[in-house]
Amino acid sequence: MMRWRVLLGCFVGMGIATPAILLLPMGLFVKPVTAEFGWSRSVFATILSVAALANALVLPLAGYLVDRFGVPRVVAVGTALGCASYAALSRADGYGGFLALVALSVVAGNLASYPAFMGLAQRWFDRHLGLALAVTSTGQAAGVAGFSSLIAYRIAHDGWRSAFLVAGGVAFAIGMANLAFLIRDNRGPLPPAERRAPSATTVAGATLAEALRTRDFWLYAVSSLLVILALVGTNFNLPALLSDRGATPGLIAAVVAVGAAGSLAGRMVTGVMLDRFPARAVAGVFFLGQAVGLLLLRGGLDRAMVAGFLLGVVQGAEIDFLGFVVARRFGRREYGRIFGTCFGITLIGAVLGPLVMAAIFDRTGSYDTGLLLFPALPVVAFGLLAFARLSDLGVERAA
Image 1 (cartoon, rainbow, N blue to C red):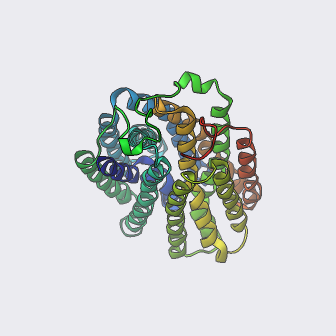
Image 2: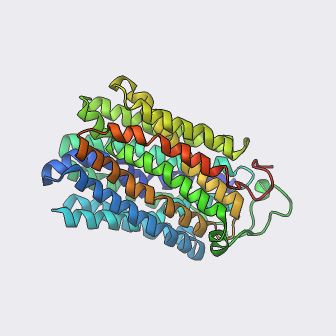
Image 3: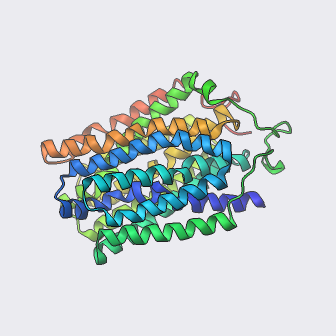
């Protein structure tokens, strides 16, 4: 039963990782931080874009370190340094300091993020790989929900500086306990219960160099980039978008919470579906949901809850899908490096998305044009997957 205990550790680890406590709840800081420093929303969006760029650059390195030194060591360093720099944001006194601390928190914190925990799940699971990746990434949804509530409460009662300090301390305490009691590496064969065939006992698969030479790698990366561009560009600006339309703080918090619930549902449903149905069909269902959610946001506040839920579902499904097809297509040998590099490339979308949406607002005074253009992106993304091989086994479903 060791693998299930480790899977719980992966869930907890993703719940206190940088995406859960910093990148995804960053929209909650837009108004209080810009009000204190007098920045425009485009200036603040630049900070998130720099963070996303740092995220994209560090993920391949994180994958290499995990493959080279093992998950526990890399996670320990990432948790300590990431949480410390996150808490230090409470002392930021200007644009340069704020930007530097966000970048440092992202670079350090992502050593204990997707490549580490999804790579660890892949070392323990194969027959139930979709479920394992779903449980792992569901930790992020749970973390976003919990830390968004904590951050919103601290901002409302003690200001944004208190939110950074308290959330950073809580994440550090949870992370250290997780390392002590749950996280265990597996550098050897899969557990017998997870082998889909008697021969599946060795660490096999492609190298990063081999993966980069395939068309499939680039189709996965560009498709995910388009989905993430629309997703992050919208979600980052969502609290401000709703506020501009007259939403109360309670409604904004409810939409954020519903989005987190959608992300949780999306991750779990995706994992189960990927273990049972063709990967391309699963992608089609969730990409369509993203397009519908973006179009609904053009309506009134009465549609915001449904739109938030649909966008949350896609947020949960996308990373699971990418992690699954990378594992099925390229194997275990250098999974951390291959997934980290592919995911890092997709995060160019997270760099561009907030900038594009904020620029649209600054130029037109609303987000409507962005909400009209963005629904086309998941449609194009699905079209790219039509040309990709989503499995190296001749079929797209697990045995």
